[in-house]
Length: 143
Image 1 (cartoon, rainbow, N blue to C red):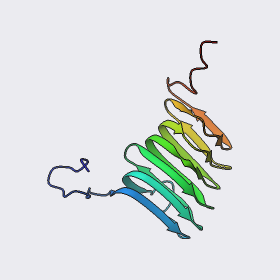
Image 2: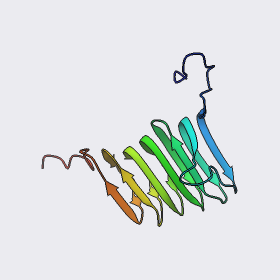
Image 3: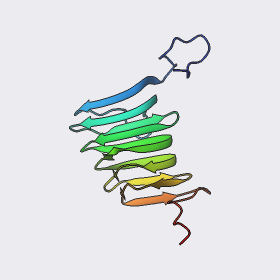
């Protein structure tokens, strides 16, 4: 995967769950709380949860999609919401950049983007924080 440290086998990093795609299914919690998250290095997060809350800390960029009736608390690098969309009852998503190829619905949760935000998908959240010097939206054209 090209993300291993010296002396580690492919797919292994100390303290990190490493995979191409992380599929989260079922009704249990993932991670303990916002202060004790599951640390990941994955390319794609696919949620198909029937309950429970999800607490993740992604080490770099992430493609995300799926649904959970629980809360989603996620810190990640540049995050792309795939066309299938991403939906949770609440929680907090923090990303260094955000691209919406599909809808992002965090219900009563918050979304914080510390850089550029773009895409045609609808973003729904109780709180939206736009930080940093990145562009928001796309060029409106030259009329």
